[in-house]
Image (cartoon, rainbow, N blue to C red):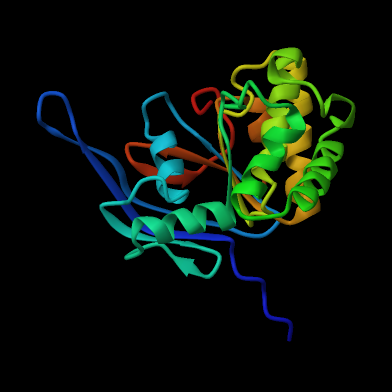
Length: 237
């Protein structure tokens, strides 16, 4: 019997609490559990302020949970020091945010090369990998352009390519199309869904966009600190 592939993300019993401006505690995540397999895109929907971005930060080792466990691939994050968490982020997780955060003084190619160079790859290897990724997202012709010379959709596709530079097993995206018009957003949604399926990465996408949620393998609703399976409805996104 062929053993099933282990999940790329497995989180259980995750709690996260903040202290509000009035000094009172605010529980954002209350025992959240989520598992994501290879080639699976999971959409997380919910009202603004429900904790969706906090959830991504905890899953991506940007914040520590107050309780619970998070495992990325074969690595359990609990107990790791800051340097070890940084290594997990760099090695295993790709991030795509609503705002592309490209370095404006560098070309698209150089932006995608950056994480590779930081990781110690040679300039030639980084250039080859970045060129291949830009081709994958349809931007070979824009490789030498700086962000200001590209459209919003092109900038975000460059950000997707950069997120894939170090071949992560998990991609976390926070409202990746929230700053784009409808047509451009749809093209980005197709790109993300295609990349997840083609490369076999796992993805968690926080979104208010029905079109993007509809492309996901599963849609989860974050409400009152709990994640539940749901269909996309009028109140969910």
